[in-house]
Length: 325
Ligand SMILES: Nc1nc2c(c(=O)[nH]1)N[C@H]1C(S)=C(S)[C@@H](COP(=O)(O)O)O[C@H]1N2
Ligand SMILES: [Mo]
Image (cartoon, rainbow, N blue to C red):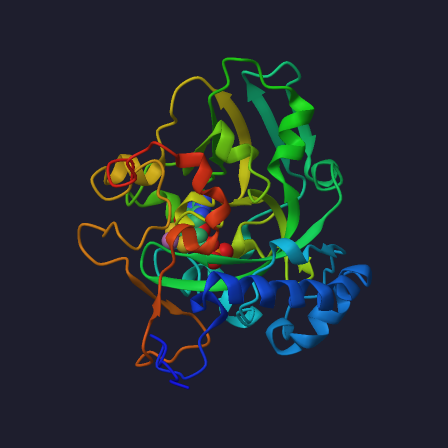
């Protein structure tokens, strides 16, 4: 039998690179194995990935593993996921948020849900956390800069919250407004971006069950540098769509003006779906480096359409994704 060398330079391909049928079978296997883990609140899965969870801080957050929504890739070590960050409110260097974000005060914290909804509400972070059962979901997150991680997030589908506020027929988009407080965030004095950092999704994207309202990771509450106390995670889009430290969720008629789109419209579109076929104007998006696993000189991985979350393709039928980048 011919053994094909995979693009990552190993004989054994990464799960993300094997054929759909094989993926399916492996996933079925994985789901069987993980059913037990799910019953035990993901404890077995965490045990199997003990190394990745090492050094997580002590504020535990219980959640049930959702194996159907969890990537099979090895989780990125907590240490990397919590020290290599993009959070410009705390500095533009990857190492700065972990050093600076201790000044962020995450309690008390309220999130106001407003705009085109029948039942606007302002929720305290603890009430928001308890609004729906918490799930643990290991998602791939790929930054537009060309690196990726696999992070076991904790949260629930944003759709759970959306259903509670009952959007009106005018609600076409959801806007996420994040905190911009110069007293807590040294970076907002800089003019790299417009503040507050705003992101948005089309209503159907926001309603997709993969879109996760996120309050924790690695079995713990979110570290400040990862967007405490609440952020969004949209796994099939570039990382910048996943806004951190949200204070307002607004339902609106028109496509929101988002921070990166304002700063460089030719480089960052509204959709920003992970797409290996659409290059960033200044670099290719065909490959990525997995943080904490691949050495700097290791061959890169191939980037997958929608970051491998092919289920979402139906959201974009009939759309030219080269134009709507
Ligand atoms: N408020 C806010 N949210 C943000 C950012 C930011 O600078 N400010 N950076 C984004 C980018 S570019 C990425 S890649 C992810 C990184 O998330 P992580 O540090 O938890 O991996 O957060 C996104 N959310
Ligand atoms: Mo990013």
